Length: 388
Image 1 (cartoon, rainbow, N blue to C red):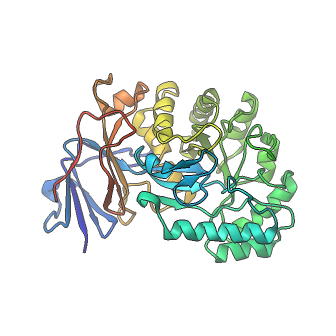
Image 2 (cartoon, helix red, strand yellow):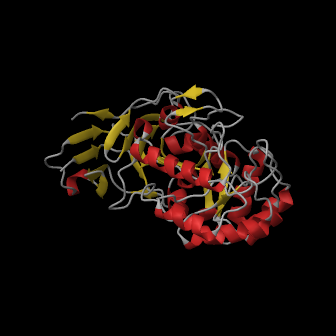
């Protein structure tokens, strides 16, 4: 039995908007799953196999990037860059979800080819986790000619997500909706490109198309890159009662704040999730999720502890993941962080609410330490330490 004890925690962020801060200074994980948390004096901390002294820093569920475009391993041909996933881990992200492997050179667009590539991508990221990061990949972009049996085959092979609707040949809402319903029937989640075109072959997808298509996730509702007009973003927030409002670093920041403000007014902040939409033309954004949390807290007047939920718990619930929340039995994936050195604010949360990034001191995935002091965030005031 592998037993991880994390003690001397300064604050536990839960990932749950309804109860974002848990009491306690200690957390225990057994065999890579969360077992208990609370105060060390009340917990069974005997016979650990690993011990981390948090030295007063904040522990939160690992962050989730809901929108990435991986290709093979830890390499992106779009930016000719190696180790972008490892860099993102250093930004506190422990889980990524593919919105389509669209940057694969020569990406097949015939039905047989796209299914083969999707199944292969699902397999290679299942078998190889760069730096331990969980990459949910193998997300086919729907093309004309696909029939219900294709979605059944993909689901049986382990494919769980579709790539962005609109990046393939299917451009009309009626056809897309039929395919989305087939995918949903077999347990495959869907997302849609929202806004202006991003790559050759893509095009404008407006609010009417998003509503008619009926995907599970409104991909980059703030544009990727170009956002829809304000009235269409507001319309989507008002009309869509269950879909996730995905805000991305690669999009329009003003539209991101508009989305959060509208969602708050409608009582729909639980539908807000975060992604980066990288690697893309804007590059790789290792700190993209942290930057979105700080920006939305500062300019969207969202308490920082709630903004962190956008980047873990909300996404976990919308995407049906076993990570992103402090909950018994879920994966022991954490980011430990503290207020950046010399950053304004009396606490880490207050500093983030003023738009400052925290310093990441450690990431843990399945109860295993994967990175220590981040090479990408500003240096933290305090650092956790592995003592066993």
